[in-house]
Figure 1: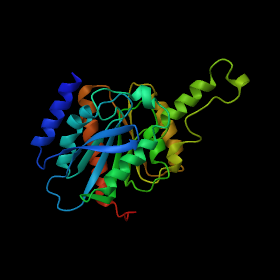
Figure 2 (figure 1 turned 180 degrees about the horizontal axis):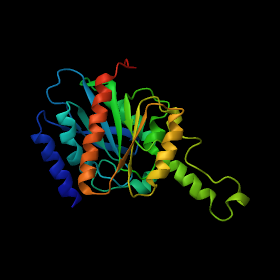
Figure 3 (figure 1 turned 90 degrees about the vertical axis):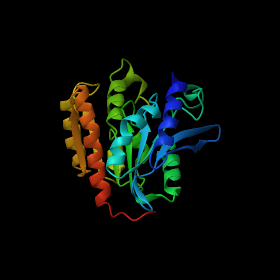
Figure 4 (figure 1 turned 60 degrees about the horizontal axis):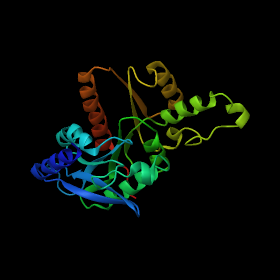
Length: 255
């Protein structure tokens, strides 16, 4: 099944106009990442670009097929990447696990900003699905993004609260957590957080947390998405409309 997905993705890139490409991104010496890049249609020179990063276990092929049309319709270049390595055999758990995943974000962005068809001042980053806050942690204190769609660190809060309530947590002292403080406080660009109406985090709790974050990060938007399939399709359009507006209005100089 995976080999057929990869073959289909490559055929999709070959048939795209302009044609896409398979690229290799150097992350760790023994674990490069593979990504798919689709140039922006009708853009001469450097184009606004969306980086879509799949959460652990999420395949980039799924993101490519789901999001390519949204990027094309808005004149955006698109790079989709996952953390499952560059070959058909995934060594993620063996080599990487779930530690220090956020270091991959800088490597991916380094690659994107090195391209001569990408506008360094108009780059957005999108975390595809939620199973951690590693994208939020990875973009904290990095000024290269004009917009971001991620969980703003809410998963880390959820994990920290869960660990603190485990029996014996007080006796052992503070349990280890992925990050100190909330990542959103250190993210320098506008943020969009999409939350399922029925998911691991209740919508009313997410609303309250985002309201608290807004005191320190005023440019943050929360979108509650219904569990219905059609609503998730509409949510993808909402996300790319939001990104398109942010990138169109971005005047941030590169560097």
